[in-house]
Image 1 (tube, each protein chain N blue to C red):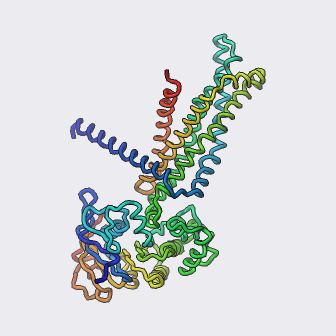
Image 2: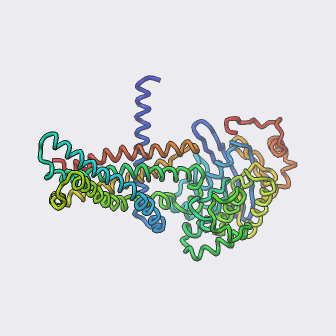
Image 3: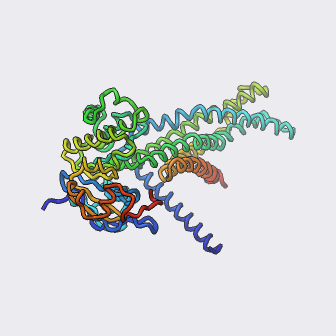
Length: 259
Length: 257
């Protein structure tokens, strides 16, 4: 086979994949906005995605805030710049705009995306999805829509909590390790935080929630070939969701703050 | 003339260059129990999946109650599937649900019945397949293969379907449990007055549960007739298969076995 044929074949495979993912996305969205809604399943997924992810998100953002305060202080000291006034600003903006949503998105991709892909993938290879069809139940409605709805709605709440914990992490290091004035630190944090900073983070969170759950569902739903296929689906869900999170993070930041 | 519950006309299906179904014709009449027999890779499962809408045939016509079901919309398929029940080879129970929720699934998710109303019906169907109320709160992981098949059967008949499909109902279980499952299939189909379509390569099972047997070989029905006539069938392929002989006209497809 010539190099041109190989490139052509790869390009066609890529287009086929893009088409398949697009179709899957459109069908999924259509089922998210159409009756019937399985509220019991949506509630269960909200617990699974939101509540059970809270400890890992809290730890991630807490230490992100702490290390951010510490490193910023070290950097400013090295350049003999007065750090106290800007550390709070750096922490609060970095956490709410970027680190909170991205780190939480990546952690949820690893914890929830992989779990969704493994669960739906196992259902696929053990004929449970076929069983759903024979029981007059649309798998998109029953499996995909509740997970996407739960992801889009709970991730912003999760990230809002993560933002608060991240800022708290910066506060702990600034006040108890670096000896900053606590009142001034909090005032500086509050004064430098604008509504659009929080809104940007929440928009990102909703988009990342959609991407993580969609990729988990897609990879699981299309998995083939027994245990090995389910394993591959799990890996692919985390990798694809993580890459998409990083790309979309830049695009949303550019949309809100690009001049 | 009575309309068949299921009718297949010249159904073909290929995967790449491999032709799996090569013009299948078959009728299942109301109240009739038909068993499709055939070796591994002969196309039995693909036939079943085409009827259920899990696969789309390349050509040909499939009708359920006189309605064409090839290429219909998802909502029309849900409407058609409301008439059917299916026992999967591995039972395909939902891991995350309890036994009674599995049995009641078609009533709750498919027909929109409340959980409170569906539970007694599920328990009644579980009793029909010999499972008591203590089992109802267990999960599928707690059950043996035979018990899972029973739960799968209870789920298949819970909605009182007009047609029930059985995919290798006795595969993977011992002969005694196999016979019990066969008895349950006969009882359940009689109880619900349903038509049955079973695929199997277990001749004991086929003889017990069928009114009519069809033999699928190389993607075609090579013989079909009443169960009592299969032993005198003039097809060497059928004779080799039902007698389990290594020598004969059947070519073993090692790649599909």
